[in-house]
Length: 404
Image (tube, rainbow, N blue to C red; front, side, top):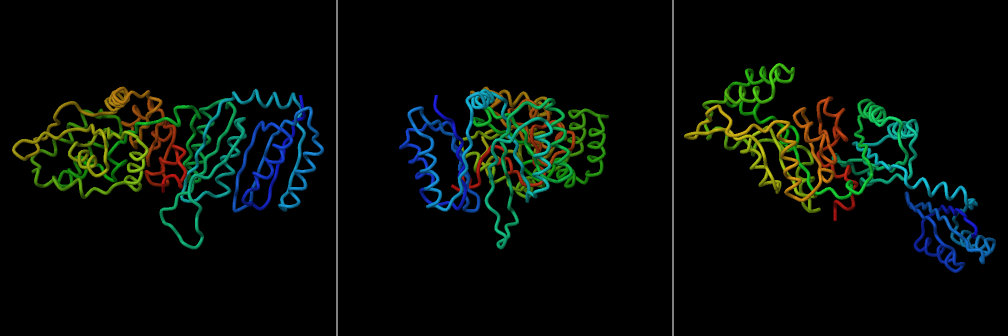
């Protein structure tokens, strides 16, 4: 057994710098046990854990490394690692690993500090931190700029529930979105994403817009309020609201879909997900005539929503077929996963309301988008301060990959 030495090099980054140092180690037949490198603002930090064979002489290797540092005007530090310490470190490789993603218009040192403190308080350790978003210009202001970093942490919190609670508190008080995911093979292999439609893909509740056209906005709002208070279940409240639309002419509503504003980032996220090979679905308690419009303009694969009953070009006030409620959304997600030969762990569900919770709770990644408090509390992740394309950062996609 030879010597184990941790080599840390830092300074101004230069082309070929890592090659020169590893060449010295190669000439001495050293084994690289671990290596990591990062560059921030043209300054490099390089760490190499090496094993020097018994036949080798550490003094000559370290001497050559020091000489190279002198030539390259970098700094170097050596730390001897004993075998027991190394083996303990190796054993910790099997510890649980989680990913925390921070997303906001900007990320302040105060916000990052609070998250780091929660990680420490719950007995976890930060292994790596990487920037996912583009660098921010301080001269050319980009109103759509998103700041995002990803932390890889190891360890097992005493209470995952309490850690999520503390993270949610930071999110609520500082305004940043924080995702907390288990880092496993499924996180990198998700292939199906389903979106709620109203107040998720679009910035509107379609039934409210139809009620405005019908002159029944106040009556519909009262029924919605009763449903929110739990005094009427979703199906019954939905039937009552649709009944108020009786008499609407198809001519009055056919152009409505094109007038509904898309959520910020909706076009971008669907375009990039399709480019990456994802299947995309809409599971909505809204209406098919809007869902079908979005299917065409956003290249959606599947649409499941409620169908207005129309006879002689007039809305009858009835729903055609089965109502798509929260439980049905979960059933449909399972069916789509089976159809695509995927496990539920490979799926993503995004929504804003309580009727989205059934699908959000069973998806591999459940995301609350600009959601009610009860939904944010129960979802794996929440996006509130940025657009729908914030989802891309939750998937660990770097900004430069999005522009390719």
